Length: 270
Image (cartoon, rainbow, N blue to C red; front, side):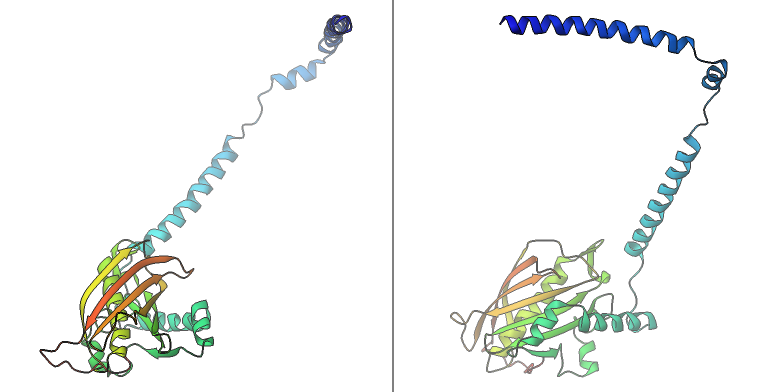
């Protein structure tokens, strides 16, 4: 205890000495300053505001250009199908499909999957009479659709590009459009299962899990529920996933072959 008090007293005394010494040392310094130094201090320093102003203006200009470009992409009207610009973009989508999509590479490496075009057994005139290959064609809509069938596991994958003409809200694909593409894709697997090679949708349920953004590639998956399905009824489960595999939509569909009327056969490449 004594040592602690003595040390405290000593520290306080040393502190006072230090303060006195530093005060004494500061006085001659102030007194010895020259007139030129005082004049320099009195002279106004150049303002850095002009430089800051230029930096701020440059920053606003960059942000403005970026926002303008982004807004232009959002509000620009979709390209009309069949125009030179549209054909060039569709050609570019096919190039991306061939070289840039990991899921395509993966499916092509699996010998159980067979690659095919949508409506591959239909003529061009017949395609124009169908929603997905007619009014929704071109880079603004379903710019590309490729199907991979796996008859061994009763699965199918549709790799599709969803253009900005399919939006229900800026940058977001309309839920009804997604339902249309999902309905067709699940039906492909059901019809491929039916001996009649035809059928209709009896029930379709969708659960939207995440926004689906336009001008991107997505994969539509379908799997036949073999335990519940028969020669006239097919239950099919489906999913929609983005480029990174994130789940966006879940679906379940029931497809049937009617007994009361005869349907045209769709064929192997629907």
